[in-house]
Image (cartoon, rainbow, N blue to C red):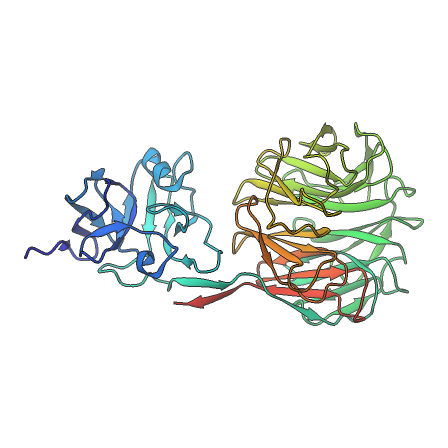
Length: 467
């Protein structure tokens, strides 16, 4: 019998018969089927995950023979790649492409994270039209090995140096350092950790109610903001030594601060009234900005480099939030009503903002691709008070942590910002903020109170089983 797969050029161009009921098109990843031909690969089962190569012909009809490329640099037009990736404009330069776990014969830049799915690298884009393949011929496992996701998010409790009310957290990749700020304690309202496991208190610039902190890589500077105190900003180049600074208005309840590297400014928000934003180019000198919304309860802010947009979250249910392209000129917008939106995060990989509800209720999450128009998401029916949210770029997931709930249900995660899955946390004691450290591969979350004493940090490790 004539073999269905014939090697014409070893590990480069292989003739194979299409066992799919429909035509398979150029660029589609395929696996070797039980009939000895090829079929569209999909990363949701062991038998269909082992990528053999990509279809080289424009189209191969059912039961017809065609060419499969198994190594080297694979070229196709941008339109042809759009069919395989679901994107527009071809491949994304320097992006790593994986086998999709949702649609057979498709590639994605986001590694699968759902339990039971497989992470199968296929190649790295050299341009919008060229993909440098990272697979082997004859149906052998991809290199590096494919991995099956068995546990997505798991948390363990860590003991902090003192039992303060910890409120805000940021991570510096260049310093390899988490910095946490708090609302209670005497001369110790800052703590730091190089790994998320061991924590050391630092002397705060003042015993203010510190609620938010951020890191600027470009300025090598931490900036924290406070709700109380004679001066409500403090800065530090290393997380250890802090200097008190004047806010634009030292009478406001400053809740959150973030950094825009593209604009070169810090932007902070308070929850008192109009003129609820201040900006700074250095963290030292601050300017008040007029905002359009009256009686705002602003609690969070995020920056999207891809959209060139700040988005501020207002926790007053039914009231407007706002957005700005520059931190100076602000426009009101209305997320879905009936929810007290409390945290916001941006995913560059998904091109999506996600927000979570801090007061419980039916609308647990919402999402937006432009920061202006918002849609309610699904969250597995879990209606806790969600108060911590972060994007984990390495694994392509949002992770949210609840203030309340139980150990078995106070975490949810999402790989698309729309559909959310329940996870398990550690001791439920009022988790209030979280930060992702790509270099460490962990999330650290902090709590503002509860028992047992001193256990106010969660670290998360996304676990994979090599197949």
